[in-house]
Length: 543
Image 1 (cartoon, helix red, strand yellow):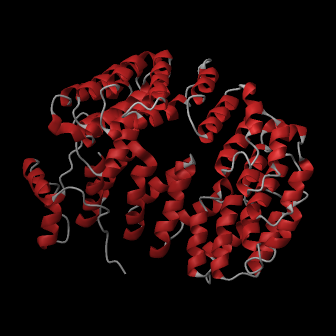
Image 2: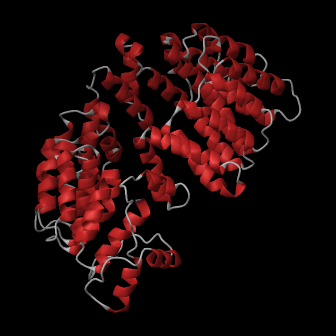
Image 3: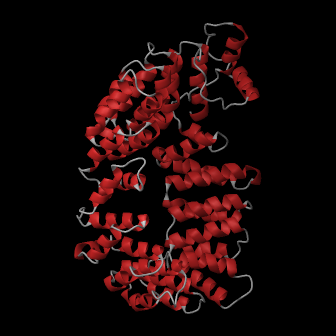
């Protein structure tokens, strides 16, 4: 058994900690315990909050060097500082761009620009693309440009693409061009595809990348452009992909050609025919989709079943009898998809055979697949829980662990008695007990009373981590009561050390920037040098 409170994470190198200790005059007063260990803890108690309380400089500091967790935290939180963050990021990019040695910082600053999403910084990202010699930086700048820019930036990006030679940035720049769109992007992509189709040397990579992005364009000329370009490209896969996209864009003139590609003798590749069926589904072509139900390849039939789940086919109850036939069939993937399509039409009559199979869980054939099917959201049914209850009664520990996950997903209030017995019963199997605690968060509002009751009680050393993890998950789902209880537990000096230890690493992921004042408070409330050090480690890492 652990004897005390252990630091969650040590992220600052020992030498740096020593320098910080000297520069800051050491930490707080020595804590009870004495000896070399306590002195070492004092040396590491180096966190100093910003004098003015402004955390923006600290978030920006993570972009210049920090743990992966704190970098992600900073990138996620920077937008909450509004224009102040965006302006500081832009200034940071301009400062670091001339110095290739600071490429890692520049890369992260470009990520920050993307996170803040300010349109006016697109010109700055174009400048980075033109001036930075580091491929990693150019890739980040291109990704940012694709997120924050618009069609007005496409022409400048095209000129940059003409000079790009590195594979990473080249791919990112093409992706950005597809997102920006506009006439300049369309013309550039078309020219690259034509050069590739003509067999011009050195155009294969550009041509492939350009093709992927020309499919992303959705301007009024996109269908005609795709029709023209596919005449230049060999291979049915290009035709099928372009026809599918044209149908998705509402170009019904693609339907006749799509239908000609349903014939397996003419188009042997099932993957190509699958694209064709998806296109016919987008076009609302019932005749073509129904014809695909007779395809010899199950993957193509599956695409047709999925297409029949789309709204126009549902409302017209197209091929209802064929879906029923597939739902009764032996192919599990097709039966499942057909059942889902029927359920979306309000028809759950054929759920009964699956309920019957589920009653044999876990040993009967297809019982595991039946349980998996019945927990799908579109197949929720009042008849399911009694079947699961019967399966629970006849199952051992391992199958029951799987059923607890199903209960968590279904969120049926009738399962609460099982959870209550497993969580609070004195003779619960340890593995089921832990899984039940874990699933309380997944139960959502249904499981909240049990979760709050657990959190307000005396948590054992074994229960603290799963219980507080579930509590934090509910807090992140927006539950105010769970959030407040997590805060109370972290503050409570009467809680055992292992409870506070389990709560501590959950505060930043759950409370985000609001964790900062609480952590300062917890540092002052720490009951040992070790506990104080654990709080300091988190403050140093994130704030």
